[in-house]
Image (cartoon, rainbow, N blue to C red):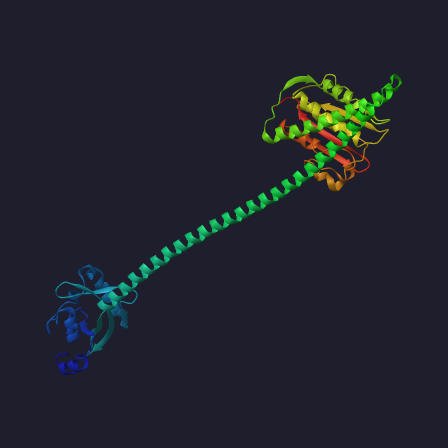
Length: 406
């Protein structure tokens, strides 16, 4: 049939640039145009009657037969090579990528398939190059992204360091200001607290020289007591300052020994009785003769003495200071209770701060460092100190200390 209409075939397909191959149901090539022959490397008319498998790479032969039969049964046009790679085999055995459109038709009751074959080697090469370029570009983008992320991370680290440095600088500046304030307060405090008793000592010393007669002994004794009290007060202030220095430099050494708490209370009450105002009274704690501690005896005495002296100083005449003591298996609790001026609620949060004095206590002599020293010592001994207070009604200080040093 094709030989009969060869001229028509040549006219219709001879000038087509794509390869045209026509096969019968036995998969034999019955006709091919010149483009197909050049594409597959065959001379003119050399492809006729060749099996179709001749143009298909050997590794595709096994699956090709079943696919061809299925295609013939469907009897529909089909485009091959879309979404997957297909290849053709040249006469010299070389393999090249192709696209093929399959078109079944029937002439004189015989079925044929016309394949329109396109060599896509150039396009494939271009696509491969594009994919390679895309891959390289993606790799470069990924590398640049990593570098950018690393740079951003580094900038974040540097920024965080800068923020932390600013915070540290602000904290240092705040501490410097606080230190300057403390220095100012300290100088003012020292000036006032030393000047007043020194003036009293000087005045009493001058007056003491005027009382030379035997009958003036009472007046001499009065001024001698004033001098003694003032010197004792100055000595306490100096001891407080020395305590602060030792606590700040860490040069505090605690000496632990076993002692009766009654011994400490007796010592504190004995000295406190000399400071009592008119009508003031100290209630001695009950049932403490058998209470013993393994602690630094001097620190316990210092603490109790500070609290009792404050209770006397900030309470008026004809008031009572109660000392109460309880002990369980682990701890000993000491309470000092007064009916004094109390601590204003607004000042209570600062009462243990160094050099701080409550608003209602400014007219009374004091350094504002005693409670700070006491708190530091008690905490160093693993104990606690706290208080409750109401202005004009009194204050209760509570110390809880382990029975034995840890």
